Length: 361
Ligand code: CP3
Image 1: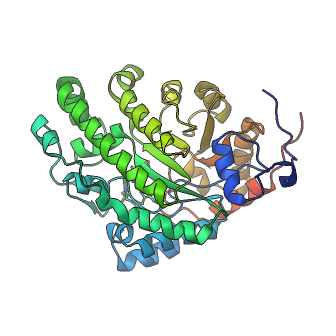
Image 2: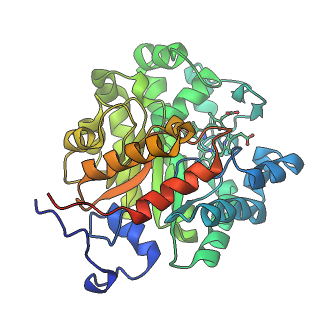
Image 3: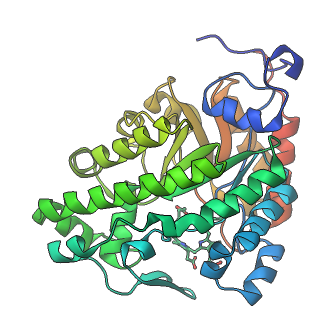
């Protein structure tokens, strides 16, 4: 592998003159003028503008009103000066058309009222109403209309395992006992559940791509609860199927998880274009585990955003040096921005990335 000249100018790169392309090109491991950056959960409670909107609307209301979802998406991306905008939505939205009611309870996170525990529960889930999620596509259309080619537009969905875990546990979980019980004890229910989830997500992603999403990110946020053998036996195939079918829609896929150090090579063999890395191992080690035939996204600890700027800069530079100018690095956090994060520190990170020059070694 050759190291690209980090001082390459836009003019030397055909097709690299549009900012939106910087992010998409990195997803495809093509050379870029500088590292693209965006943040997981870049629109959220840490941002004053979002809290204002939340005073008048619930989270689900914002998601279901395309004008509001687009506004929240656009405001955050503009305010931070990032290279990509992730559509404001939530992982759990597909549960509703599948027949499961949920709500977000203050301080408790999501609660699914009648969790899926038996084969009969799984059989009752519907797969014919993904079209009800068209409000997300409408919001994407508005965001795409606003940004044009200036920024990359990211659509997203949960990965089959992570979504199944919410449906079965009824919310967040520490030990995933109900999920793993179904996985181990009722292979028929487990397989049918993942098949149904994939069917709905394929349709949901297609709506998002048709509306103008440039890239789809698949969040396998809780896949780190699985050991490698269980990931292989119970989660890999459904993830791979979803990754491949989204790619057939003509867009690159980012596949993200947390506490995945032991799963990275297997996650990469889903064929995802980009693998999300958490912060628990240095970026170059993670990239080596993924394999350099894939792009990577990451991997600043989101809590570093509470550190003084000199410490923050040190960590940001470490990540950029570990990437070493290799095509296919997208700067991001290892997980989402948390409430009370100082916005000015997030903006400072964007500045640091825009100003960074790799010294030649
Ligand atoms: O800019 C963005 O990234 C915001 C869009 C977004 C939201 N949820 C809005 C949201 C995205 C990409 C998500 C994805 C999501 N939702 C994930 C995967 C990302 C990850 O962190 O791993 C997960 C696991 C969920 C499920 C979910 N939704 C949780 C666990 C919570 C937190 C509950 C809490 O109170 O902290 C939510 C709620 C949620 N989704 C919020 C936002 C901005 C905060 C709550 C609010 O505004 O009331």
